[in-house]
Length: 265
Image (cartoon, rainbow, N blue to C red; front, side):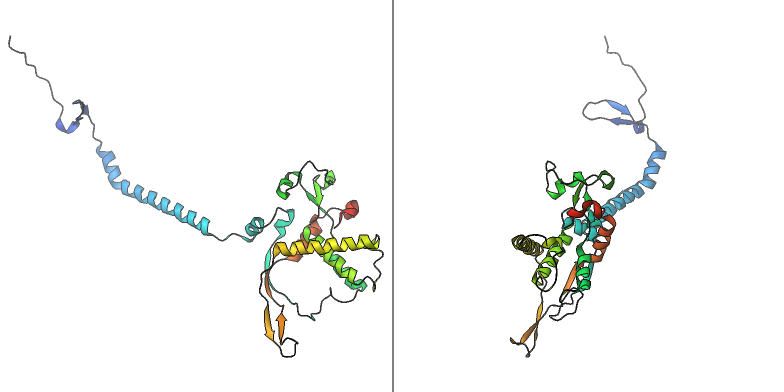
């Protein structure tokens, strides 16, 4: 029998795409509008995407290379403190000649003693319990607690005021035979106890000075009137924390002195 032959309609060539591996045919419907849209707006989309990518890269580089703020520097270079929010830096040239006049210098007078006391005599501040880890302190220790109405944390003093208190005590000790310090708490004890307190303060100041290790250069001036023919220039330039800002902060945040009289530096 002769083989049978049939006839069927073949799809238009423009509407057929042949898949080579399977030999099957799939009908593709062309969308002239979609093609036109991509032709018109495709390049714009690519340009917009490229612009966004470049902008993100620029912002990323700027964020990485941007100088840190004063607050960021203070937090990076310091142990946590509630007073860090008060830290600001100022450029200062020390006025520190050998014979420099100062209200903190010279033989004791009631006015001079008051000036020194005003530098460091602040009450303690509240330290939240959840900040003890930041101070490398254990929560298992029976720390002196602040009253609930004062925050309910533990009480703490700022190191700067303890350091100035120590310097004040060393100063007073050198004048103990010329001025009556018998009513001062630091002199309430036997001569040995007072001496131990002074030695503690000397050691505390040494530890602090070694910790900060000021490497600012001071220069020498030629001066034939001096025994060695030179005179040190101690009027050096420094970048300092604004001490008055920290005092202001302490004045606002210090707990009631009467409630913690024995806990001041």
